[in-house]
Image (cartoon, rainbow, N blue to C red; front, side, top):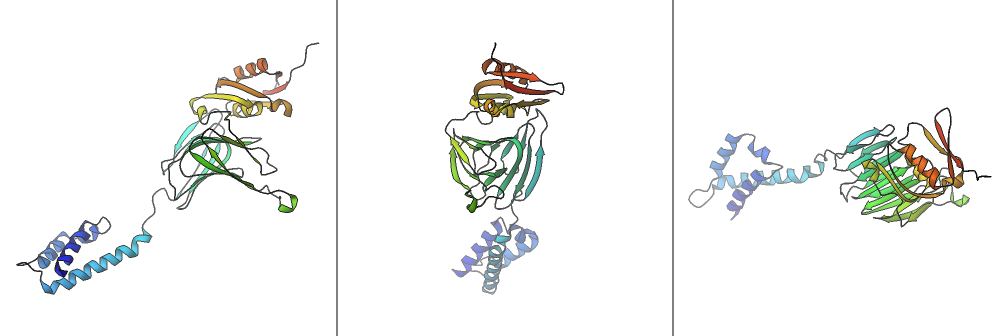
Length: 305
């Protein structure tokens, strides 16, 4: 029985994916070893049973010892930066199978470690199609607003006034870091983690305080801008103009906070910003003023005398 186990063990080691190369580096030696250990007349040569068992034990120990030091997956260590210009959108495939759709006027840093996939969205907008990996979360940091995910689809907009996260598929966790200089003595505390599901969006509404506002209605369908169209349902004028500025060769500014918070439902191509401005002026009490320097200013429309 012991001889049979030795013979069987050698055969199994030869087929082992990690150690087959150790036994097949010298095919002639392997063949000679098989002949020496081959059963003769119903039994195995006793002189070589010990050798076979020792070989199995040594290689078995080697398998156990080196397993923790196996090379990490190619995507475990990865770093890259992406930056887009006005009206330019591009898709970036990451080595783990995730895809980042980088919006116009956007800057992103990506860093993968064996424990975490980390993205810093410095400015702009990006849509994330995240490959599932429960052991290594996918984390997006947008100016202190942190999105944690293990495999789903969501949109992050790091705008000049607010940060918007909208989920298309799955569930993400969103937290907000404490603002610099704030303290419990000052009455500010980190926003508690919020769970955002498909069809919801959450807003970080104030840079000075760690406030998160969960909204059950998405004002802009996540990732729709990838097809070159911007569509809004009850969005603030500030949201619309912040996005439009990424596709406009110039700058659009809203003259007052009151105008910025007006709500609008609209849809336009990313190359139709001037048409959108005309539509806004026809829909809201807003007038469009253009300066000689190329700036566009939205001001309150004056009532006719």
